[in-house]
Amino acid sequence: MNRHAPPLHPSDLGLILSYKCQCECAHCLYNCGPTWRDWMSPEEVQEALEATLHWEQPYQVHLTGGEPFLKFSLLLHAVEIATELGIPVYAETNAGWCVGETLVEERFTALQEVGPSALLISCSPFHAETIPPARTLMAIRKSLEVFGPQRTIVYMSGWLEQIQAFGIDAPTPLEAYSQVFGREEAGRMFWQGYSLISGGRSGYRLGHLAPKRSPEAFQGQTCHRELLYAHHSHFDLYGNFIPSFCGGLTVGNWHQLPQLIADFQSNIFPELIEILIKAGPYRLYEVAKESYNYQAPDGGFVGKCHLCVDVRRHLVGSADFPELRPVEFYDNF
Image 1 (tube, rainbow, N blue to C red):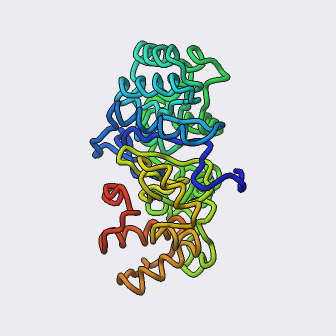
Image 2: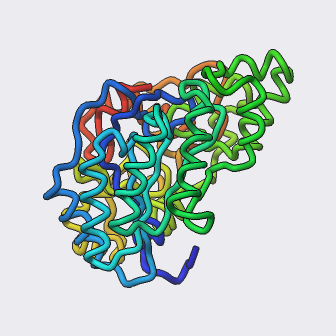
Image 3: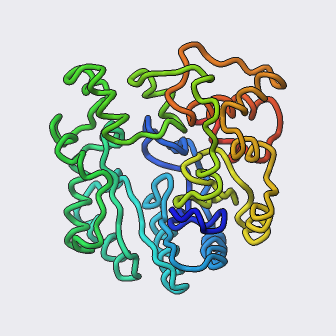
């Protein structure tokens, strides 16, 4: 991360083509799942990619979701447009769709022919709760054949051996880790071993496996870095510019990217974004408590992102804050 770079200038920008996914993973920061329906149109894909040209290189774009392979024609179109524009691009997949070697080889070959720089395949106990590891292994094997080892990224490869330990032909419930390793060790494996972020669903579905603290414990922890200088951010299909890994929170509309960047350079921020930049989730908690009758749940929070998301869940039902988008995020915990 370059602190001297201007604000809102990620080096790795994701296009969320859809929040639709076969899975509803416990660790998902964007609350993706099967109930989502909408997709970017081909025209919106082109517009989003052209918007990134406002930034100077170097930066790269990753095509993601949800699961982008669920609408393969759109994914292929996005790769073609990015390649034509000279933007380094890679695609991501959870491999849940990899039900046959012929299908996988055909899609990877078609993708490779139009020019992505790499393919990223997710590997985690959270994906393996829904996706049989055999599909993940098939995707990796076929990617190595088609893209080669230099353009095959396994995230996180350290989990490859572990997800096979319970068998590869059926999904593995997360409870199996607590049963085999004990609750404390399972929590360490998930939270430290996978480097979980406590936003999205994580704090709620996996928080019982981690220590929790009161809201006051996060006093003074701002989101200045995450909201202004995140190297990893997203444009979604609804026009939201999502900073860092902050699902359900937008700094503005990427359709107006030049004006949005100019505003941030002039320290003009949306109301909730300004609170988070200057004072962090604890101050957001205080505002919600003082003005919107928010009450923190018993038990506390895993991290500042967990606190932030919980406060935002309350605020989105209390007033119309344009920063809290997409609103469907808050219906998919």
